[in-house]
Image (cartoon, rainbow, N blue to C red):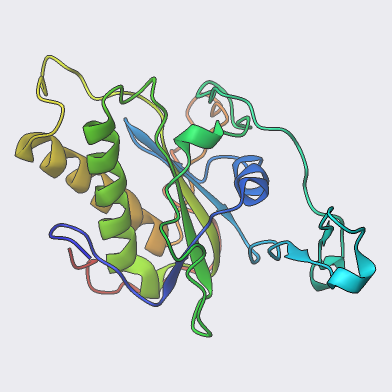
Length: 224
């Protein structure tokens, strides 16, 4: 763990492209000027594993999916290289845009009920140092709120670039604080169970501030 980053055993990482496809196929749950949040109730698809050598063709290892764990066949849709921000349904990200799972792969513990995935496209953050900065702020804020998030798979994607006129440096304290403040406000809404209303409202209709139903009990702000 590095300075400015925050880790927690309560928050695993999404590493399989098929899981990104599943989550990004859902409508945006929340959005801010630069970020969008998608949420899917469930667990990551099981990792592929090799069949015993005796059951495989010599020289050609065979892999299978534990379909019984999910009750359906795994998602195998191909991934495109672009993300659309103009509609509720978002095509899957390019592989290069996904978060780096790190040397340990999927962080999986018995405590995991929530998993986080990051999508920071190069077209919104051209410099690698900027993408690293944004991903670190997402992980930091999400980890601080992990205990209060609903279980399931969460994906945060950058949906627009930060204005280079306001933030000319590829990585600066000003950019870090701007991203963190925006993400903190977004995750505070997520822990309150809010959902953005994306369809146009009829004239005179009051704006929706959250999901209809039982109000959530307010908790302390996410630490960061």
